[in-house]
Length: 407
Image (cartoon, rainbow, N blue to C red):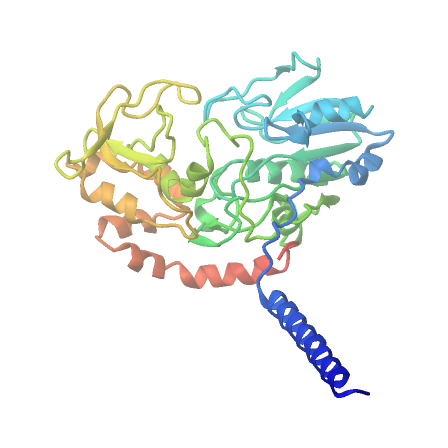
């Protein structure tokens, strides 16, 4: 072979080797870089119709639902009850928890029995004199579906509704199907643990203020820990979520109750919800519910923020109505992964007349313990108070781990 041809062949070979190595290096670099692909969207259990509709075929169905009980579709969403009826499911009646089936009642306001004007179905209140379905109310049903968006805070009453419905089902040999939904505060466990002697509808079991579980997981815990009345166990089926983990950030497309209008309010609710057991306004009567706090009896010289609560949607009679409230605006607070006492402590320390601050019975029911009020009155710091929670939190986390469905 001529020398020129040999040189050309050698150059070509070196070029091919270099190109191959460069390509392998580029491939290795790409493999080491974190994926920029968006995570798969979370699918609510209500949308997994192929799984649960066969379980309802030929059955007489009762539904525990509120405005968050929806099936998402290209038009936005359809209420679960309407979706079931369109699929020829024999829905016989609806059970309405706090705020009502269509969501028009204030927090704490009794929900009345009635008839749903859109479907003609009878509505049975679970937030009045009757909070647990009776044997008579279940007598013509074959199965109950429970589908409500939770926010993962112990004093949010829908987990109490879940427990009482499960008790009724267990007592009457009625299967219950829980359609799971994401918990927007499911990424942590924190807060004071409920003391057994202070259980109420605002906390029926010895769990922390924020328990880090979905409704489906919590239902499994109720069964597994024997927390239903008389230690009964319900015939429970949980329809699971798709693509959900406890670290998932989930935007609630529908406000879960009238006074939780956005993601910030839901995230601050565990901490600011404790103001419900005081005379301080936590944003009710404004468009920034659970994103601010204030009162007319707090020291106006300390704060440069004020507002005036007025009756509005979800709050007919807000605390401090028509009064100028001095306090703090928290609407720009970044996403939190803890319960903090800093704001309740701040409000208490800057209350001019301390006797006006606590509604002792209400605060104990929300906190789950009388110790928290005492700790605040004794001048303990946020860090000192939180340190007293840790042993109970570790005990609960070990119990919780047995019932988790999602990572």
